[in-house]
Amino acid sequence: MLGCSGSIGSQALSILQQHRDRFSVVLLSAHTAADQVAAAAGLHRPAATCLTGPGAAPALPAGTRHFTGADGLLAALDHSAPDIVLNAITGAAGLAASEWTLRNGRTLALANKESLVIAGEYLMPLARASGASILPVDSEHCAIFQCLHGEVPRSIRRLWLTGSGGPFRTRPLDTFAAITRDQALRHPTWTMGPRITIGSATMMNKAFEVLEAHWLFAVPPDRIQVVLHPQSIVHSMVEFVDGSMLAQCGVPDMRVPILYCLGWPERLPFAFEPFDPVRWRSLEFAPFEAERYPAVGLAYDCLRLGGDSGARLNAADEVATAAFLAGRIPFPAITATVAAVLQAAPIRPIHSLADVIRADDEARTLAHKVLAAAPLANTHLEP
Ligand code: MG
Image 1 (cartoon, rainbow, N blue to C red):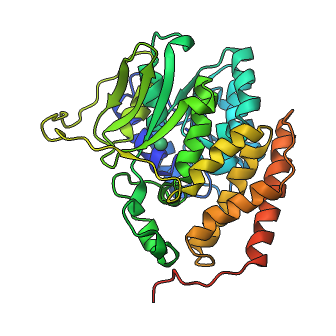
Image 2 (cartoon, rainbow, N blue to C red):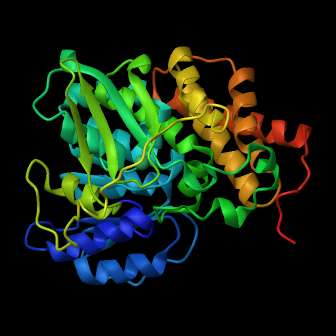
């Protein structure tokens, strides 16, 4: 259980607590949340814990070995030998653990979509070689994964990724420069961490999901479509060559895809409020506007460019999102910065993790340069 203190991690732990007859938690990691790791370790008594960031070691039960740092996480994986790795780390920091899991032929329940965004080209062959399964926790991809059950690739006409459109779906475009941090952090349907919530407002998150879908399902970019669906009930759809559409639906609750991935190929019982089709009798869909969400087009650019472009996309977005959250740049500058980095960077092929890390470093440096060169008014700060 990697990233156990975040939104996905804590929901996963609550599920695991209800299924203790079936799962034993062998590793808990977080970046700095020592108290949460200690509390969960007291309950689950894992073989290992890890804090990848700075801070004092948590108080742990006897028999639990503690590791620290990014390298410590890989040592903790070796020590605890999990069958399933739920990777809920945020950002590029999750890549090495995904690589470990796939190289060792274990099952990867992937909530760290960045792994595939930045290194899909490298990770997918690794999974094929080791026979590792990748189960997407991301609700859209979990939906598509379920819709594709028992299907063959040539039957697929298109993948339809749904997106809520975030909090600014109907906001006048000429007011985007005045968007505040708090407004951007208020997602209409999902409660998530800050980075993904900002990514939902810019729809950079959907851009990442286009890349993620491409790598997971081996569908070419021109057959991956984004459609807005503000209610987040239809989690995504698959259109088949015979005209059939399959959609996976449910109220927005990340525990459902987490549970699906943990239980796969079975379905585990979950005490949730029964779905009421009458309540959701009118489901709304709207065309996705490229002008409102320029981030999405960058995903298709990356798929055209190939190589390490996804790593650059992610790194630049991490830097630009942090700058927006720190009040240093206005909202539209997030995507503009990422686009500038992608345009400027020489794209190179990926042969190893080192190539990915180099692209990530270069793109971060470049993103900081772009931000420094064009200091933008803090018009979005609240008085
Ligand atoms: Mg998603």
